[in-house]
Image 1: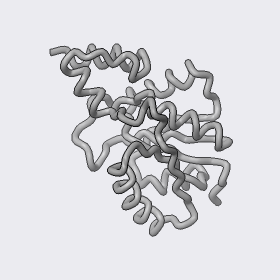
Image 2: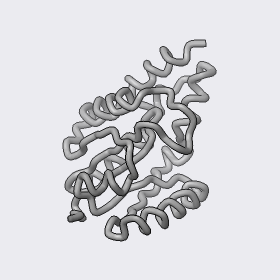
Image 3: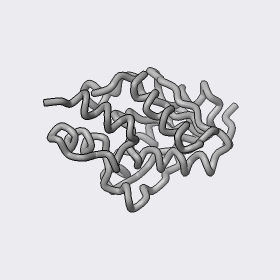
Image 4: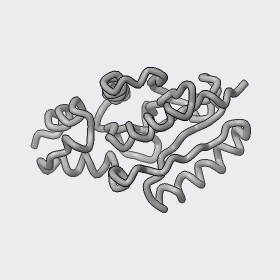
Amino acid sequence: MADGRVAICPGTYDPVTNGHLDIIGRAARVFDRVVVGVVNQPVRKQETLFTAEERKGFIDQALAANGVDNVDVVVFSNLVVELAREHGAGAMVKGLRAISDFEYEFEMNQLNRKLAPDIESVYIIASPDYSFLSSTGVKEMATFGGDVSDLVPAGVAAALVERLKR
């Protein structure tokens, strides 16, 4: 049975950004327990830069550094509603930055609601500091030598420099 005090926060997190961490942290203040689901192989995006285990590790490190202790991070390869059911979650939390995010999430909400009407979708609007921030943009900046150290956790910034050496 779904518990309204438990939420999942699914995503690709390739890589996790400070915007993602802001949404996760805010969700952790609202819900008793948050399960961050790192999708193993995303369907709508190309191959990931980092493995699922690396992405999970970045999030674990960042949460530990920020003292967030009511969040678990897991890798998943099934439907997001199945992830919610596995963890007894009654809600799915997603961040919204812009209208384009809303359009995509609205469509996903309708599909997920068809599969699991008992699991609510909850949307958290991005903080102004992060409303422009995306993993794709961070990777593009890092690819061309841009400084992303204020956009991602320190471990992610270092990994991006190493992974994207040109």
